[in-house]
Length: 114
Image (tube, rainbow, N blue to C red; front, top):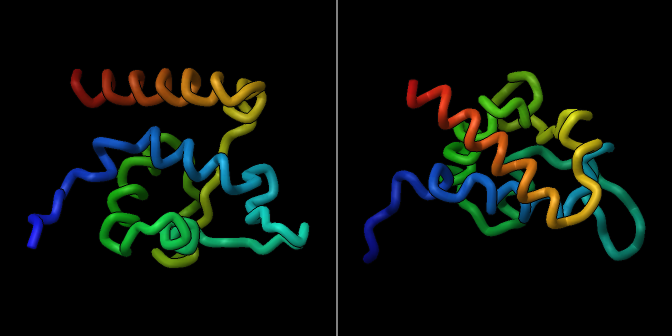
């Protein structure tokens, strides 16, 4: 049995978020699907679709929450992923998503390291 990596989401928060952004329409908070129907999903549902377990999803939340990318705390299971207008407006192409998110991640890391 492999040892569980406690820091999985803190090591890959940007990759996790980019994967989420490619699957979901965050302006409306709905999942994209093949039929064109839209269904609102919580952050935990999004994580489970990506193959993360509950513990990993909680770690992702711990990483993304300080970035302002998760809705207000209601109940742990009823929170939604959000993207601020500033980020949405800065994202023009897929390449820019990574640059914008990496800059946010760097600034947050600098704050924590001070």
